[in-house]
Image 1 (cartoon, one colour):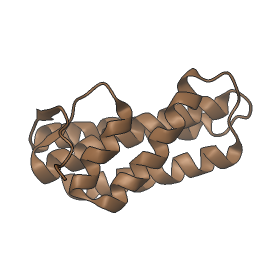
Image 2 (cartoon, one colour):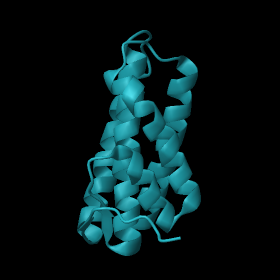
Image 3 (tube, one colour):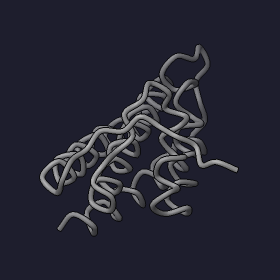
Length: 132
């Protein structure tokens, strides 16, 4: 079976550190929104998803000098899994919430928010570890 091919963008440690910093900023916003109920749950999850995507970029840049650059966010976890399968699964969990958080018309649950923040935090911790 041929490995999946994905569009990528090259980069080095400067770009990896920048993406890690962006990820941390998205997580800060997610945590601020986490203090609220109702629609803020979706806002929190949406920012956690963006944090995880940016952290995945940082991890890939630090490990292999490139990051996913396609339009399909569902393919970003595949790219990260090439570097670390467990981290790819974490990102897949987050990306699975993206459509509902960003485009859905239902309020997600506090359980979804807790899971999203947990996954994003783990990805960011690893991105920081790999870029410092």
